[in-house]
Length: 166
Image (cartoon, rainbow, N blue to C red; front, side):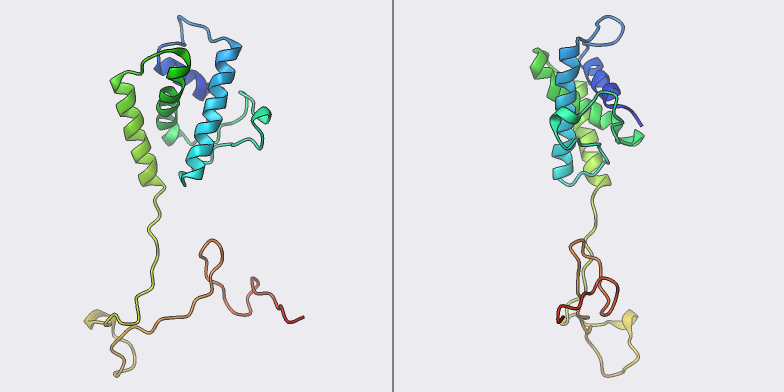
């Protein structure tokens, strides 16, 4: 995993402002860090969960902190961060960087997509491949579910159930 500084430097390299020729000033690094934290928080709010280390307060973030971004997602993060940083320094982002950022963002969306689970409706015929033990049942019988906030099933009398009659 990369540090936040490595992500910020990678973004500045993407817009040709860092590396062997240019040294980044502390102000540029702090601007990049703020943009980096904002991008990580924005994606987390949109449901793109990369494990980015979002600080509780913007003042608590450090360039030496681990980013939490896995290796497979770093290029998408860096290119999108470069698109975010470029206007602050008056640079135009190349077409290649914009395309890489768009491809990376789409890959992150696909990688974080969860297929919602659904129960068959009561009026759905069972069909030939879904025979039940009873010969008279021709439709699915829905199961009553109790759910948690994360849509996990609760079992009556299980550890998650509380007795509110006390």
